[in-house]
Figure 1 (cartoon, protein in one colour):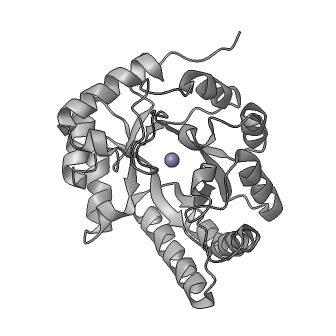
Figure 2 (tube, helix red, strand yellow):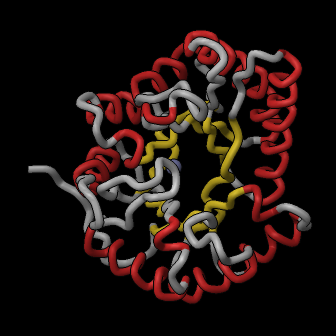
Length: 278
Ligand code: ZN
């Protein structure tokens, strides 16, 4: 029988700021802390026009830990100039992560529909490789997040844990790892094996949770709250924890349905679902 820890408290609960999209950083921090959430993954849009130092202090003064910065990536382009811009943008993301105390930047690796996936994958390899020296200098890692194959056309040419693991092995750098998001990988028959492989290599950095809500009405913004869909989150969390992972369970939900509701009620629903279905 699989051993999986009981989530009796919220000490390992992290929320992505995009989950409560209507809330700016100040409100999100205040509400998360009041609800007993311990971690926050900051999306870069939430830092726009703000002092990074003040944002870092706002978060730490509230007793929250910055779990990740979302997101970098989007390396591929048929246009060489755009590829260079993407690398520069990722270097800026690394600077921001260092400034707010995020230990890694999550990568949505990108894909350009005007070229082959093979070309996009090569450009992802090149783009990540070009950022790692700076990553190491700043002490900030890069976390490849494989995306569900429905996004292979334009969001990511890295679609399975095996691909993410292979890419990490190929580049072989201590500042490169993987973010596992149940939404993207739950369907994969090799998931358990590839999670074990990732953990064994010391590369499993982050764990994102939500649910696969049916019918999918929007490819991007119809994720379910834990328990609303068909993902066996607890089983996958068990596999992740069996690798020795003791990090945060990060709730990342893009949902037009939920964003239309009252965010205080949504936060309460997240806390209940976290205990019951994660
Ligand atoms: Zn994710």
